[in-house]
Length: 166
Image (cartoon, rainbow, N blue to C red):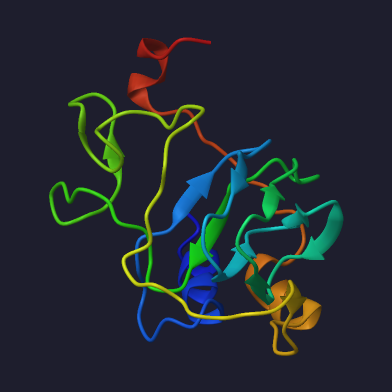
């Protein structure tokens, strides 16, 4: 989990504290909004396609009812977060809105999302008008402080290393 991307996205979507968001891996889902929403898309190199137009990550986005949002693959291949005003409604499991696939609990009916599933926000967002990218954001310079350049991890053999698969 990328805690920085998740929490920052929650705030960009107008929440005063972290709420339940949709963590996705690339490529992400295609979602249709049944109601006006305030959202953000966060994660390294994440963006979206809203009604056919590319929208940036790390910005609050006003989305009109009926809009279609695609979450395309990011060049880094890392996970992204779709954050919505009020957060998504999900069953709690061990104090989290995450889904435990192994136990079939939490999240959206304790399973992976499937075509046709409906994700409900905890709070309605009333807004009229057109889609819009709002002006405030996190800058590329700010993101470099968190994500920086590619990092390398060095591993040393341990006595139990022979027990691990190649």
